[in-house]
Length: 88
Image (cartoon, rainbow, N blue to C red; front, side, top):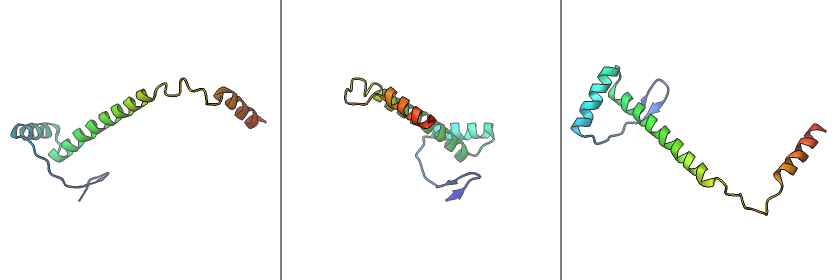
């Protein structure tokens, strides 16, 4: 385990091609970063992008889920009642 400035990280191993290693070394040198920090930053960005995409897909799939339900209360009426009680 290694403690970075803001978080604790755990060592892991991945298999990379020679060209991937060369690109990472080159990019890390140009950016003045360690290779591990560059890989973590790229992975963080990838995970955030895909996490948001998954969340948006779930929200889109649920859109209109209750649209034709007839067994639900009138939410506008309930909200008016709650507001009146709160203001009373």
